[in-house]
Image 1 (spheres, one colour):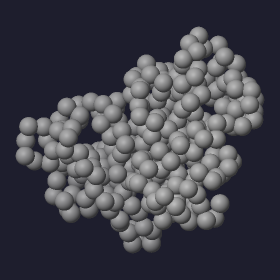
Image 2 (spheres, rainbow, N blue to C red):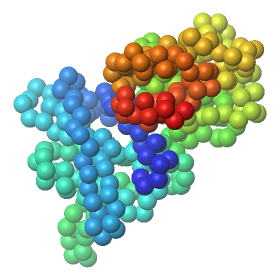
Image 3 (cartoon, rainbow, N blue to C red):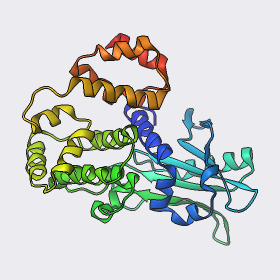
Length: 312
């Protein structure tokens, strides 16, 4: 979690899961969803821990407090996204658990999403302390290891999280164009609002950015889609406007539409923007809008947006 790439990666996952938290549980842990009151979900501020033995600082990715269904008691769902393989990650998960349990004194349901590409061997899902004559401790946590999941198993899941995470599942190199198209096709069936739709398509485009050869295959399969309505919707929701322009036989996208879409997404993420900031965004050219479409996932408030605009 120390380099910028990992932080951005974690931010994308946190944005996805926090926006579609119940859908995430429905997809992977339906039994947990059955045990909680859906309207009770609230996200706690990140918790910061320092590993004094390594001199490193860690932050929890996502911590949700939820109410047991039909009861007055609560529990925590702690979710970590791990973007790289780490030999003693299981020990760190136990430390998180112990400190969170000590601080909040609530039951904790721990979940890890392993989102790295390699290795593909099964990840450890427990931490234990034992002696030859007895076991002192075994701490278990739930694991979703994306590179061991087959994307085809999620094709017919009417779930936005499935639509996004297919892009990080086990994909053969030759399948990348097909998977991207299937992700976008599935997205057209979900009928989400524009901001949430853009979040999913932006996630897919981040992890399935196609090269020139792959784009040619994507375009060929795109043209074979039977439904013109699906084609039009895919072209509307994709964040890769340059790729859209090539598919439409144009070099320029719809400038006004890009501006309105970016403003809608930024308002959803950051709240109402000042008229000065909106005017500055409306003055961006097509290339700058594309850059802002990617950078927006790293912005936390209007001040960070203003700094980005000043540097662009």
